[in-house]
Image (cartoon, rainbow, N blue to C red):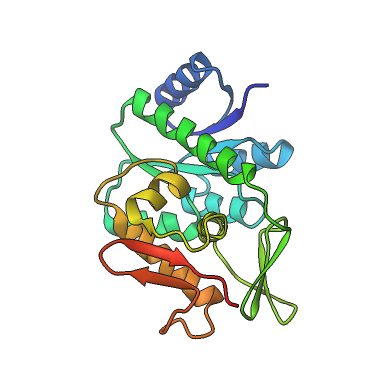
Length: 230
């Protein structure tokens, strides 16, 4: 069964071009021309991925992302003419899976979408117990939640995916490029700061003392390794 992509873009020509290209690649496509329509379409039937323009009438792409992330971990790829570091960080903080700056190649966009689907498939293929204890924190893999003393600890969806991947490879040192490939779904040289920022957020959520991490440790000059507490 074809995966469904919700294309949210206010410019009619680009919206139609994207829809046609994705359908040619074998995806089922729904479209929305503004923020409110995107939220309504999502709530009617959740797609497998959302391709979301940042600059939208009625409701910005940032606000749409907030709404979607409050209810779902669906992959989100942001499309925007902006390329500033601030915009990228905001998108990542909200849980965007990728960020594509206009103008872009349709072939590249399709490749990134397929990479995201490969990554989500791989994350789901390795079986782990539904509940994993990491020191004072319990990881509810099925519910995508962290619990400390029975209370939920806030965690961004992409940070939870990073944790899930590291849990599937305990004791294995992962380079930043490997984490970009397997958690973000693509090889993106030069964007290793993205990994460092997410590791910082992850440590803040799970480490007893984030300033002296004992669970997600840095291997200087290489990357990171998850060591489960004894």
